Image 1: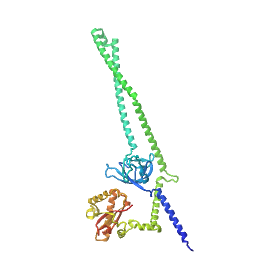
Image 2 (image 1 turned 90 degrees about the vertical axis):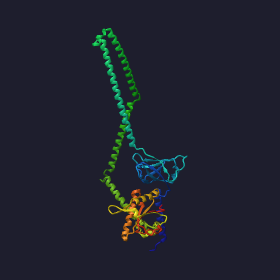
Image 3 (image 1 turned 120 degrees about the horizontal axis):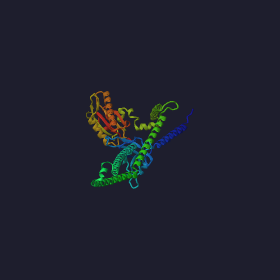
Image 4 (image 1 turned 135 degrees about the horizontal axis):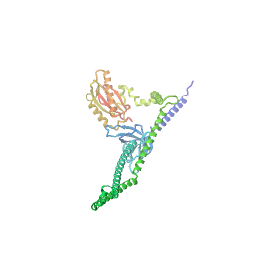
Length: 455
C-alpha cells in the first residue's frame, strides 16, 4: 500500500493548527495572553479575600488578587498584590481607592478599584492604592443595640422620677384640702379655737401661709405638667416604642432569613433521588477530580515527549528539577547562570545540633536568611528559589544524605517564615561541588539561589 505523504502532512498540520487555535482561545478567555499591570494595597482585615479573588475597576472585571503578604505583627496590615488588565490602567488615578465588596448579600468577596478624577495623574505601575476598611453589619447592629439600651434606661429613669414627683404633689394637696375643710366646719381643736380673736388672727396668718404654700404647690404642678407636655410634644415615648418595634422587625427578618438558609442547606445537603447525601456526592466528585488530575498529569508528561513539543522542553533544558542529576544540574545553562543571585550559608555558622542530635538552623543562620529575603521581599513572592545543599563528609553516601537534609531544612524555613509557596522552592543536593559559575571549588553548608529571568 502506497502512503501519500502530502495528505498525511496536510492532515497533521491542520490538527496542530486547530489545537493551537483552541489553546489560544482558552488562554484568551482566561486572559492568559492579556497584558497586565500590578498594583498594591493594604488592609487590616482581608475579610474573605484570597489569592484568585476578582479585582474590578468601576464594576468591570479587570483581574485578580495574585498575592497576599501576611503581616509579622497584629498592628501591621495585610499587603495585597493586584493584577489588573493594562487596558483599564487609564481609569486608575492617584486619587483612586480600593474597597471590599461582595456579590449580593452572601456572595463572593472581591476588590473594587474606584476610578479617579480626570484632574489627578495616572497611577504609576506598582503604586500602593489606599483602601477603605469595610463596615461589618454585625458591628452596626451591636452599636444600634447599645444606643437603644441606653435610651430605654434613660426614659425609664425619667418616668420613675416624674411619677414620684406627681404622687408627692397630689398627696400634699389632698392633705391641705382636708385640713382647710375641717377648720371651716369647726371640727377639732383648731375649729374650737376660732372663737378666740387672737387665735383667729393667728389662724388667719397660718391660713395665709397655707395659701402661699398652696400657690407654690400649684406652681410646681404647672411646671411638672409643662415637663410632661414637652415630653409629649417631642414624642419621646412614641419614638422609643417605634425604635423598639423596628428592632423587633429586624430581628424577626433575621430569624426568617436564618430559617430560609437552614432550609436551603438542608435541601442542598439532603439525600438526592438516588438516596445519596451531599457528603457522599462531594466525596465521589473529589475522587473523580483526583482521577482526572492524575490522567491530566500523565497526558502532560506524555506531551513533553511528543515530536512537536519535545523541542520546547529540550530547549528549556529540563522537565522538572527532580529529574536532574547533580551533574546535569551543574552543567545546565539555566541553573549555571552567573546572573543567578546566590547567598552562601556556612555550615559552621548557619547550622547547629539540637538536644536530640539532629542538625537544625542556628539563630545566626535564620538571621542571615531573613536579611537576604527581606532585601528582596517584593520580588521573591513569585520568583523561583533553589536551595542547594552541600556536605564534605568522608563518605559519598553521607555527603548526599547530609546535603539533601540541609537543603530541606532551609527550604522549610523559607516556607514557614515567609509563607512562600512550596511550588516555587526547589531543593538540589550537590554533595560538596558547586556549579562552575559560582566561583567556588567546594562548599560545606547551603546556598540560596534566586533564579534570574524566571518570567
